[in-house]
Length: 347
Image (tube, rainbow, N blue to C red; front, side, top):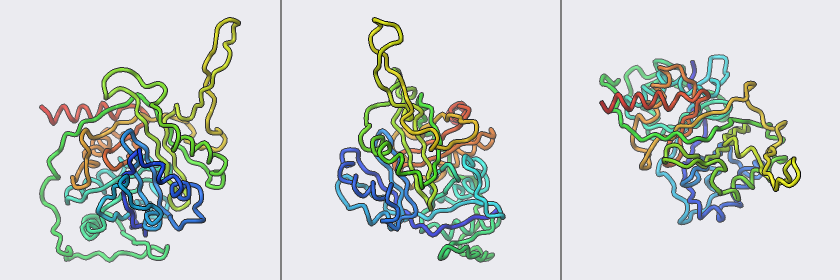
């Protein structure tokens, strides 16, 4: 397998909900007018708390500083695993790289962020940790660094480059609270050329639809639905993760029988012929990791989630945000596997 260090130098930001109005113009530019921006790595994820942005340096220049924008100190580099033929590992492959990438980096105290898309999985590491990353993974991967769009082999340094190979177990497991909202999510893509056809709908969803999900259930905080919408435009490829209910647009009309009053009916908000999903059209269940905000310094969070899922052979998408992590699987088993893990650690 090959590990590619992409050219993007990414900043991670939190945009407070009350400040969204201030950034509508630059966000629309980054979302819908890529030819007017040199940004090649753009990700926007809405959560109940805020909006998380992952943008390269060109995208970062578009976002003016303000009291509403919190910027993580580090600059992050983007890693991607591919086969020797150059094909990226299929999406939902975070469990496939759990043992080969995620776990070794955790053992060497490298903090990572994950961004799964419809097309592939991106691993983000802090720029200052790159030498540790290369040394840690050089025995398992052929490592290339993109320079001017071309992959350049990274020489292996058998002298360990000053970083001794870890002989100890990984970091002590931290039991973070997990929640499993009732929402079901779609993971979708579309041809970038058709993006203008859904632009007004995306603007409505991102900037004007701030009410709770329609079918939010009563009950504990771990069972109700949550607001979550992720859009990424990375190197020309689009990926969207959204609540299945977001795909529907409700309107009021007459009931079929006379005298029965009004009936709310759903219609598709996005044209079904433009949004593409897997042939099975499956919906994904989410597990949200973290009670207090997770922060960026703790190592092993992704490993402690991806490891048990890999052991159970469960494919999953994984999306890190500024404060929390999110795992999605298509069979709803993530919560059970992670709950058993937590029960075992607590006993």
